[in-house]
Length: 122
Image (cartoon, rainbow, N blue to C red; front, side, top):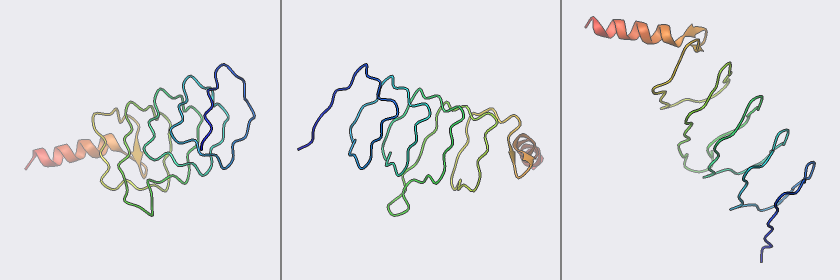
C-alpha cells in the first residue's frame, strides 16, 4: 500500500529522492531551479508554463524499446538555442518565426525563399 503525502508551504530544498515511485504526483507552483533529474520517466507527462532558461537536455528519447509516441512543443522560445545530434524524421515546423535559424550554416529563411522561387516558376 502506498503512502500519500500532501506537502504544502514547505522548504525541502536540497532534498534527495531516489528509487521513489511518484507516478500521478502533482507539482504546482514549485521552484525546481537548480534541480537535477536523472533516469526519469516522463512518458505522458504534461508540463506547462515552465521557464527553461539555461536548462540543458541530453540523452532524451521517446522510447527506443517501445513504439515511439509523438512529442509536441507549443509556444516555445528557443532563441539562441543549439540542437545537436538529433533526429527530426517527419518533423513539421509550422507558423514559426525562423529569423536567423540555420541548418548546417545555411539560413532556413534563404532555403524557404529559394524553394518558393523555384516552385513558382514551374
